[in-house]
Image (cartoon, rainbow, N blue to C red):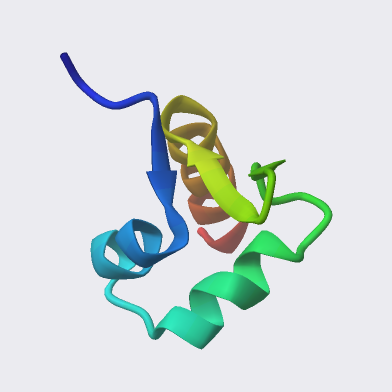
Length: 59
C-alpha cells in the first residue's frame, strides 16, 4: 500500500532540494501541508496537484 503522506525530509529527497528549502515550502500559504502534533506532513496527491499547477504557471 502506497503512503498517503510524506515527511518534509521525504519531500526534500523527492524534489532534490535542501531540507531548509523544503521547510520553507511548507510555510507557503498555497502549499499543501498539515500539522499532526509537532510533525509536518504533506498529502501526496495534493502535492502532485500543487506541483503540476506550479509547473503550468512557469510554462
